[in-house]
Amino acid sequence: MPPAIEILDGPLFPDGPLFPFLPPLAPVLTMPTSPLILLIEDEAPIRKFVRVALENEGYRLAEAETGEKALSLAADQPPELAILDLGLPDMDGLDLLRRLREWSSAPVLVLSARGQEKDKVAALDAGADDYLTKPFGVGELLARVRVALRHSARLGQGAKAEAAFAVGDLSVDLAARRVFLGQSEVHLTPIEYRLLTVLVQHAGKVLTHRFLLKEVWGPGHAEEVHYLRVFMAGLRRKLEIEPSQPRYLLTEQGVGYRLRD
Image (spheres, rainbow, N blue to C red):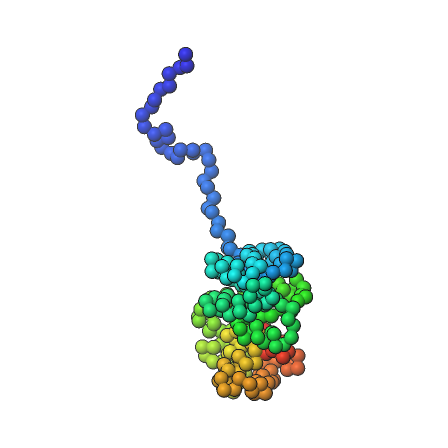
């Protein structure tokens, strides 16, 4: 017959923790979440190529082979960046881009075999932030992704973060309306300053001729590309060490301009 078990009144460890011999638990560290990228591409080999490149850099990925699936995924879990192929089986990529732009401000990087200038302009005017023509390499893809995510982060920080901009020796104090190249202040005309501020507000993004003309001169001048070329040349003479080989004010041939980010 087993011995009787004596029942004691009171706590088992009246003067200490239940397991005093265990070390205290370490604080739980919350790791930052990597950006979520929505990849919209119907060609499986290209989708795999992009997936491997992005996952190797630590990005999270959601994938869609059709426009409808992409809209559903973007609504369920909004991405920090969308990579969009224009040739989808169920809808034109430009139509999908316009639908996304109705409610999403996430940057969109277009991947397409349509390499003509008019196709690039159409995509950028529809709301794309950048355009990469197939075939492309991993290095260029990742560089464009980083630029788009930096642009997205800057917009998400609000107006206070946008009060100043700097890249290399160029700095712009938007609050004080002052521009510096190194330690020297650069004096711009009102139109030159307006053109520069539009580029600063969209740094890293390709801006079409039409967009810049409408923003700086108004809708009635959207076709006056020569205005833009004259003032861009003036800006480069004041802000670039070698205006013919610009470091900051970059030309996207036949499409528009980009301010280096």
